[in-house]
Image (cartoon, rainbow, N blue to C red; front, side, top):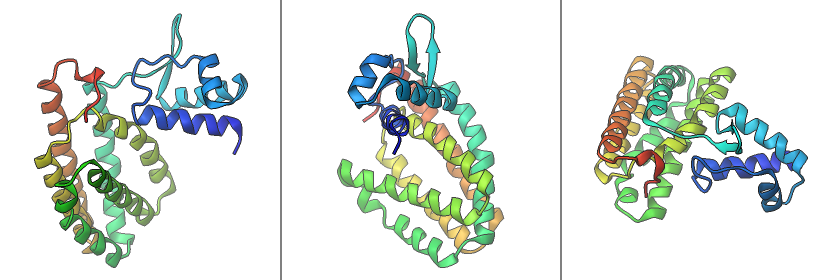
Length: 222
């Protein structure tokens, strides 16, 4: 792997996981030393992050990690609704039914994961990521998949703005099971509707969390 690719991947992961929170200055000297690369490949990495919207030039401070706000989240969910509903509909037409039936069953059993500790919760998020990946592959649309891949980078950051409410997570598991079930039935219209309902509920939860937590955009949720 090229040095610039290695630096990009490391910085991207740190930003997405909030190890480098919004507002962090990405100084060339400091980051190059931390990542064990020279400044030239680091500049390439910073350029890619800036193009993706994960970093931005800041007068007098070099490059900084971009902020995440509720307004940004609403805009992302508007785009997410259009893309994910279309992907679910295509997956219902083109996907393997037994694959999504199996995923539906896993989400139906997810309550045990969500009642556990953080590692179990992490396994649930891995299951969600697997559903996303399988839907993208089943949709079989290269441009749609690339657009969703770019979008989900920002959605992972936004997830940290919302607290892991047990009731919401259990409801989310049911919603994901319904999406997988609709795809397994080959019902594109139902799959899109189930996806839209899930996204609507997720955004409502995020809004309620933010409205009850002043300055929460500067915090990370556990």
